[in-house]
Picture (cartoon, helix red, strand yellow):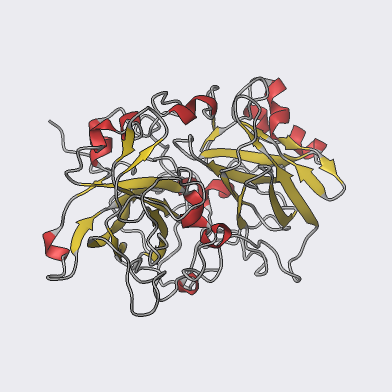
Length: 204
Length: 249
């Protein structure tokens, strides 16, 4: 036997379950007093630089019903394309921008919504620029491993056409599942877990 | 959003995720997965800054009683019902290195197996002194600990007579968004674990064992609380010493 490699295995995922809100957004489900505020509720403040936009949509199951119990987290660069993270190596991001947000689907309608700013461009490892995008992570009852996808912006036709990751998608008819159309200041990003419009999910 | 740290920040791409170690999206015995599991193959790409960076939280998000579920929802002078336990462990990466400054969020049912959530209709009673949620931040050696009561097992509408083993849910943030993880901790010796459609979604028995916290008598508090140890492993970052571009550790 050769020497062991001494690598640990990542802790296996288990579903977030139907009561995920208790842990991630207790105030939303009426558990007050344990945490002063739920995390991830605000990405921006009055001084945040960049164009204010709203992101909203639904997550649909295989029958076309919206999930009313899912939680979505987003992570994005600031208006200059910098991440507010210690792991950001290219410069300091806007100190008035959180970059990370968390929202629950509405328990009646399934609608989720984020108020944020439009992100700048972030390079791909080979130096090409990626189109502006927002990383999504979706958890819920019935989802065994959190789902990763990305929102791209419907008004960024040229950048999207040159995006290295969108370019990797072999079946071009699936690319539109990642592109949120713009109406006024709102981009609508519906996520389909199954079906002919199944959203492209990423193994990152 | 973050506390300054003396450690150099973690950078660089992550080891690819071993998706066979995780439950697949579709585990039909857990019936809700049938309509919520993507059916097409996920698309892979090399980590970009979007995956290598992530939110980091500081002590400002941690309240005084966040690591004490026995008291953080209880009326003054009262405490939650149930067997008092300490849950502790370390957060490590795949290279075995401790990961400090990790935000953990945890939630659980009360001692009777009931969640404080309007969607939970189990006939077992709510405990007026138990909310069921807490937070902790790992220390420089990756360690964390919190106090709670042992949650009860409970029935759930899946099969006619399915019971969840006692468990605590964990949400874990690393230093990069690609490390984001939610899992569940089970308790050593629980006979319901091997019947559970969720643990049975794991194909490798060692993966199930990785989710089972052993009784840890060394950390018990005599005449007060028993203890369980639950270590968590997050994805590790590749060393980039011999790669063409210097972007890692």
